[in-house]
Image (tube, rainbow, N blue to C red; front, top):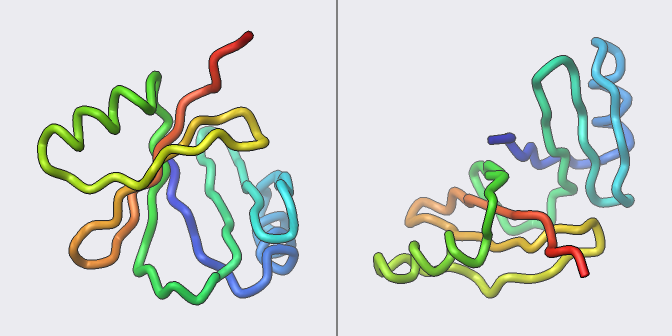
Length: 108
């Protein structure tokens, strides 16, 4: 699991985390990662949605997890294939907290 921190400025957040030993990797101007030892944080530009918090789950099969959750009556957003090699989905709970999840795309 990896927390997703909403930030006002991704570049500024990257610089902040580098100051105390995190290595950062920018995906694009709206998203980056900060890693140190076994800790990994996602830094996501605030899109104004006002989500209280997020977490990212790395799973073996995003489609299977989505199917399990839907069978239990949980609303899951449509899964998408990303340009960074993941199949991802999400659920937002009744309090606005977001659980994002993803698995590697199958290799051709």
